[in-house]
Amino acid sequence: MNWAKLIFGILLLIPSSWIKNSKLNAAIDMAAESFANAEYEQSLQNHLAIQEQFGFVSSELDFNLGLSAQYAEKLEEATGYYDKASTSSNTMLASFGYNQGGVLLGNKEEYEAALSKFKSALIEDPTNEVARHNYELLARWLKREEERKNQEENPPEPSDFAKRKKAEADRLVEQFRFRDALNVMTEALTQDSTVAAYQEFITHLQEVTEINEK
Image 1 (cartoon, rainbow, N blue to C red):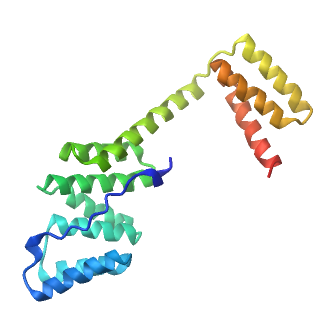
Image 2 (image 1 turned 180 degrees about the vertical axis):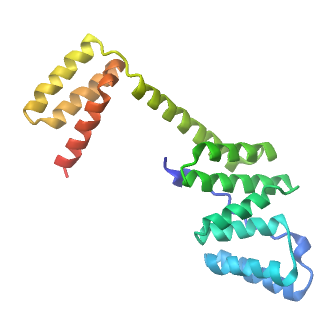
Image 3 (image 1 turned 30 degrees about the vertical axis):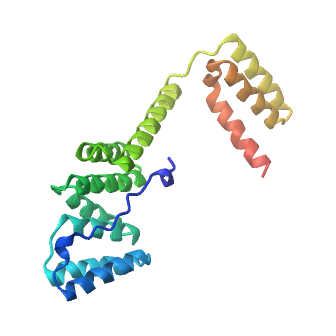
């Protein structure tokens, strides 16, 4: 699945309760600036400094740390921070945490777990359109994959039409006319779904054609 299509909920959260003194303000500004400049490793360190130097422990900070770690490609750390953020009493923030955790799981091809995260994001905040998009996109893809696997495991019995087209394609293959054979099978598939019984043959033709036409 092309996970580039998934929308990332990028939001650097800076709650007003953090604004207490000039040193803290400077630390917050530095963290926000490094993230805005795509200096994600530095952003991670700057946000950790807020936690360590000023004793802040908050879900907002966890989410910011998660974003910084994610884009610094420290994905295990990011997962931990998002898990913490998803326990927030702030339902919007918890929803963001679940959504980002789902994106990371999807990138690891743990699709069922990712779908569960997106669902949790919507339970926390039904107005989270980013999570809704991700949930619906992944759910549709998983359904198509299940249908494809079922078809591969239980191929249909080819009709007489499908058998004739397979024989025609075989004759073309004997003449090394692989592209023509592929065209015969793909066109036949649009007319008769039982041609899918020869999916392995069609896939082989596709591979041979791609090699020959490079």
